[in-house]
Figure 1 (tube, rainbow, N blue to C red):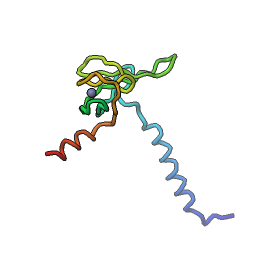
Figure 2 (cartoon, rainbow, N blue to C red):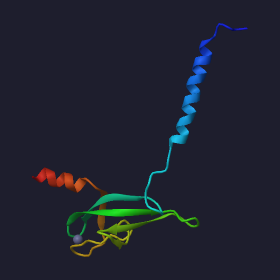
Figure 3 (cartoon, rainbow, N blue to C red):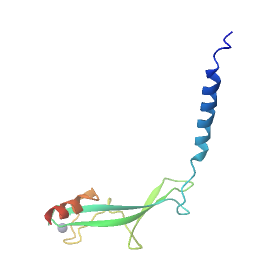
Amino acid sequence: MKDTSGTSGASGAGTSRTSGTSGAVAPRGGGPSGETAHEAYSFACMKCGYAWEQTYDIEHHVPPTGEPFVTYYTDGKRVPSPLKHPTCVNCDGHLLRIMRSGRVATAQEALR
Ligand SMILES: [Zn+2]
């Protein structure tokens, strides 16, 4: 018998506290049909060299049946996915290089 090991009781009490953290994960308040993310993409045309940046409101939809999909909005208007059908705003070219936001802004700051 090991009656002297009183510390085991103290450690047991500690582990019982950690089990409560799983219940603390509460769903974040967002839209009724999913979360809306704000993301900016940088576009660079391979044809004319024009580069710009556009911010999108991206709504994530997870229907009960079917595959999840996203819808893109710019200035409150729905637009087609810029990643699937990018179009150059300068020459209507479709050969674009798409990057995540930040690179164009960083390049413009470097030119200052
Ligand atoms: Zn172009």
